[in-house]
Image 1 (tube, helix red, strand yellow):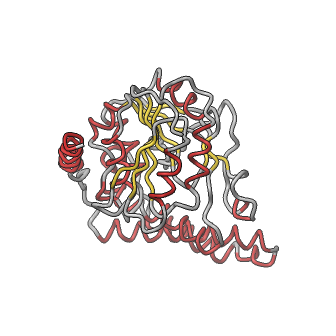
Image 2 (cartoon, rainbow, N blue to C red; image 1 turned 135 degrees about the vertical axis):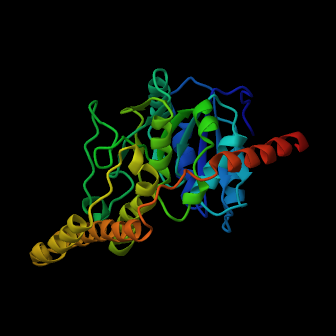
Image 3 (tube, rainbow, N blue to C red; image 1 turned 180 degrees about the vertical axis):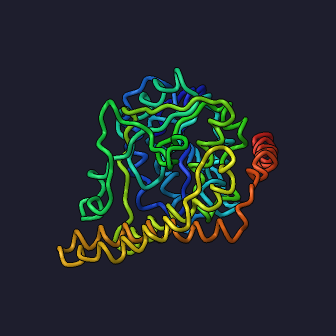
Length: 327
């Protein structure tokens, strides 16, 4: 039987989702155990799933201790589009975003709400022990989580927040036009949003107590591919933010770093499985930077505007408002 749920919510949790029927229940269960007293809703923004997602959400609607909604975000493939559609369908003045295949800790909502009391955008840490029993959690370096935990920075530029553990005042997302959907498929959307927010004058802060258990990619090949994409996506970001103080990597240094990693550290290949895995992941990262530098230089180091986020946002908002009227 569906519990009596409050209509008015202050916090909206948006979950961009694609073919995550097998893992989404763990995230919905984690949200059911929040210690917060803040009224909140959960919006599952479906980016065109072909699995059993709809029936999973329908089942959870009957027992979740919070309002749960599913919205259609299949109009354009990409996580940024799914986030934007989910935000526009939500109602809270505070918007939190997490991923479908992770699990937020019980104090997650309260951690972001507390940080948002004095900041416009907030980000929390991710821990990798809970959901990753295999060796994947040992292949990369993850900073310890404590009261001094800080947001990551890229090349001494500005801090940034991952979309897997994100919070913001709604007016910030409205002002920025949401996440740039032109970056879907390229990566770097999290950094782009974080930097645009700060350059627009909004404040950003860490929320150390808003912890998410993060699910890593299974297998060494998938991990190396993900790390490569984390660095190769820097090319369009250098084009956008170099004039704002983001220093692009130098070709000579990027090439030297790659050569050093491939050859000078090749002796790690003989030091066991863990050392070999770490070597491959580091090579993938260095190779991504090298490719990014080539792309940046080939494109003429041009200054590229931040896309048509405002136009996309206005179009999505118009469609969302029309759907509400029809509903």
